[in-house]
Length: 207
Image (cartoon, rainbow, N blue to C red; front, side, top):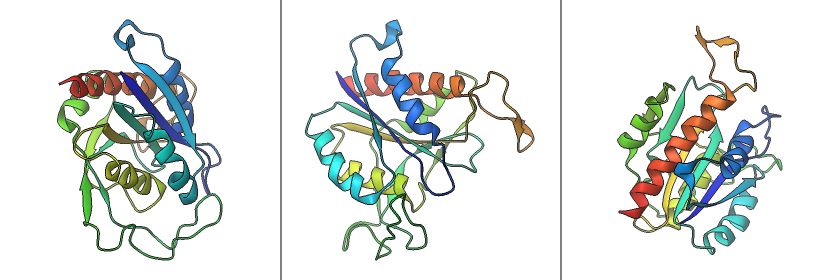
C-alpha cells in the first residue's frame, strides 16, 4: 500500500512549521503496525502555485492513502478536517507573497468538498493515545484548505483516501510549557497520534 504524507514549510507569521517535521518523521517511523506501508513524505512550500504544480505529480504515483498535515497556530488540539471549503482569502499572502485574486477556489464549483475518511473512528484512534482531538468542519481559507480542496477534487470517491489534519504549535521537549491553561502537546505526542491515524486510514482503505 502506497502512502503519501505531506506537510508545509514556513509561511508569514510561522517561521517554524512543525507539520513538515511531523510528515518526515512519520514516513521514517519504524513500527510493526506500519509494515507493508510504502511511505513517502513531501513538504510543500506554502504557496498556491506549489500546490498546483506538485500535487498532480504526487497523485500520478497513485497513492492509496494521502495524509496531509498543516499548522493551526491557535489550535489547542488536533483537528481532523471533514471538508474543504470553496473559499480563499485575498487578505492572506502565501510564502511567495502571492494573494488570491478571487474569493473562491473553483468558479461554479460546489460550496464544499467532503472527504470519505471515517472521521469519528480516526478521532477515536487519537483519543486512545490520550491526545486531545476534535472533528472539524472548517479548514479555514488559507493554504491548508486549498490543498485539501485540490486533493479531494483529485480523489473521486475514496481513491486515494484523503485526510487533512491541523496540528497546533508543538514543542520538541517532553515537558512543553502550558498554553491556554493546558500543557501544550509535544512533538512526540503529535507523531504518535499521526501513527494511529495512519494505521486507521490504511485499514479503511483496504476495505
